[in-house]
Amino acid sequence: MTLTASTRALSSDDFELINHLPENPLTFVRGGDGLVGFGQALKLVARGENRIQDLADKWREVSASAKIENPLNIAGTGLVAFGSFAFSANSEAESVLIVPEILLGKRDGRLWLTEIKNFEDESNTSGRLIDRDEETSESSFWNAQQVYRQSAVELSDGEFKAEDFKAGVANAVERIGRGDLKKVVIARDQVGRAGADFDIRSVLQKLAHRFEGCWVYSVDGTFGASPELLVRVAHGQVSARVLAGTAGRGTDPGVDRAIAAALAASAKNLEEHSYAVDSLVNSLSPFCSQIDADPTPFSLALPNVWHLASDVHGVLKSSSNALDLAAALHPTAAVAGTPTDVAQLVLEEIEGFDRGRYAGPVGWIGADGDGEWAIALRGGQLKKLHDGAVEIRAYAGCGIVGESDPEAELAETKLKLSPVRVALR
Image 1 (cartoon, rainbow, N blue to C red):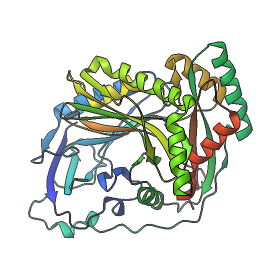
Image 2: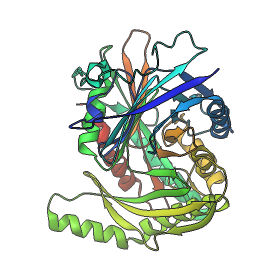
Image 3: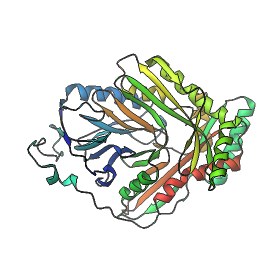
Image 4: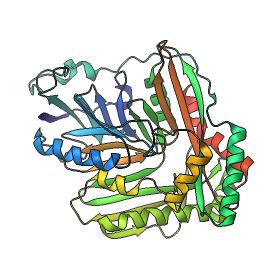
């Protein structure tokens, strides 16, 4: 198998990536910048305990044999794969890396196109490599894609119902009180049904317009708008953003400021946040010659919630790629708990359902090893049903510590589910 990738610059005047999504798009966009993939030149699949590292190693092999023509020194140019990973090693969900046939990218006002050909895949339909004399405006992908506005989809309790969730929180608080662990993240699911003509593009567009500061993602049926960057690697620099601690926004500006101040002073939320930061720094340390984390968290405003946030920066000291770091970091205390190994066992016992790719890494990696991986939050998973309809399963979770209250945590999940619920209307 040999992949060939050819990249060229395009004119970027008034070009909005989110308006150029194909059906079943590969998407990783934030604030207008990012990547959109068309088609599938290659799909790599893994399962089990070493799923992330296995695909990191496979990607090295694919990249080493690829023929790449890339005159642009921009992150996301050249050969790129989109990926989405199962949260748990025990999940039935596949973890995937998908190389598109056509890639559109935009960053800092610069726009490019990459065409990728798999010369051993007869199903690849991308045709010849890019004709440099071809007018960009003649390419079908250049035109804004028509999006079908489907009927509203309502979500209701899934496998882990609201009352069961509250009982699970109480169970977790009891275990924390006994000293079994310090923190555990408990999630619940909601499910809805859409017709066969369901178009995920309208959902992604709504999320992108409302949550410009989030990473809007769509990979192999996994979609959402994540506020949390697991890790970014760019030219030897490593960065990440930790979110832990949440409060709903206020409708009055004065009340809203007071909520943000109260969140920043909350002992319960500061404790939860410190576990997440410490977990990430400890996991990054073997890969970095230097790590700097915000000494105190700041309040990050999203349209519907406040989060406590901390930025972490490091200098890569090895030949590791972005997926190697994602493998080392996942799962963080922000989505599993502390100690992480104990928390994983507890959350799986309490939840009793398969999270699939919820809270797993989602993003992209380039042939040079650079990439961006968010945590698959504020989203869900699509599943095609036998009758042609589409099942949509959304997820939300909360960090549980000793002071957690079941009713308050349930209310927090409702806030976190609201981005998907609103986008489906």
